[in-house]
Length: 282
Image (tube, rainbow, N blue to C red; front, side, top):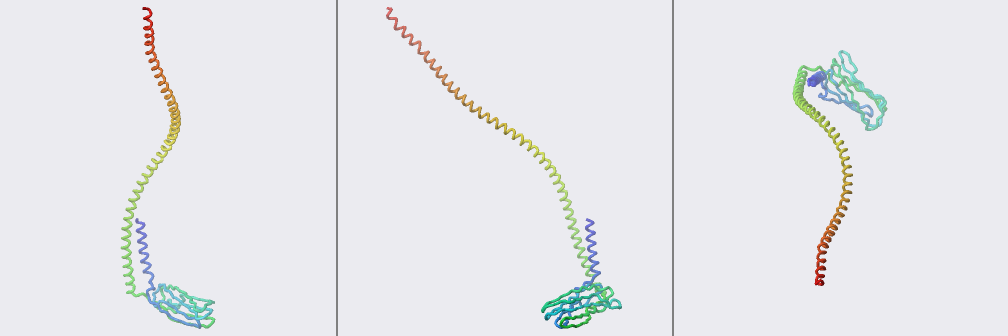
């Protein structure tokens, strides 16, 4: 957390330092000058005002009124640095053919020296297949920043700093809340991971037991199938034996009943025979 705080503080002061060392020239007004050399015409756009160490841009546009070849086109920007004129930027175009209505644009970025003053001096010189010409003008006015401007810049920087400080405090509060939530989630994760390891170990143990029980079940299933086959065969044989015994029992009952019946009838018949023989003796 302290490492993040240090990064944010360094970033804030770096931004403030960068803003204080470079004065933005983009807010100033632009001026445009036009030129014409033969069948080419164009314009040069530049900042009206800038300060030393500013970075400014010059936008060059060239338009061909008919087919033409630019043999040489030079734009040189100079500034009074100390007590001597010094070339700050040069743009040169050579042997460039253009067709009617074609636009050619160039952008020149100039970083002003810290001791430059007065106006920048621009020289435009062109030589084409259908004419030539030269133009010299004073362009951007370079002046030292006044106390009021520095004060305004300081106030703007201070307001930006206060805004960044408020944003930093809010981000820090959010970070602390997120860090607390992260710690809680990390503790829950550790607990869940421990539970997972325990459940995974139990799962592996249960899977081993399941494999063992499956093997035993398959063995018992084979034994059951074998015993059932034997049981079905024995049940069939037992039913046959029961049928035979049932028939034998019925046969035995009939036989016993018949025997008893004939034994009961036999003495009566003999007695009648003896009685019939007695009258002959008298």
